[in-house]
Figure 1 (tube, rainbow, N blue to C red):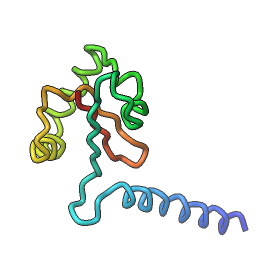
Figure 2: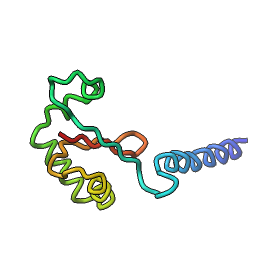
Figure 3: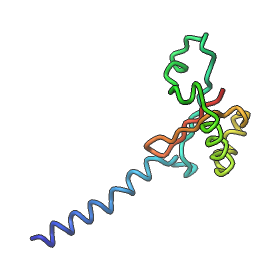
Length: 107
């Protein structure tokens, strides 16, 4: 009986990563989804700007450096941003979502 329970548990565990990995990828390109959010001035009362985490609204030099390093090291991310006509020097932060997607904050 114990052997059957362990076998069922092993099958269940081995199937879990495949489902979550597939949901984080775009079915057509095989790449993670990327969302670009433009941070506007404080004067604007835009709901989307108000929902930007404080870390990215007022980025530290370390946050900006980390984002720039990630752009340099990820060719797909860099080409995506260039295709969207985002000036790479204006990227102030990159947040990785739980599903593997990226949220890029641009000033």
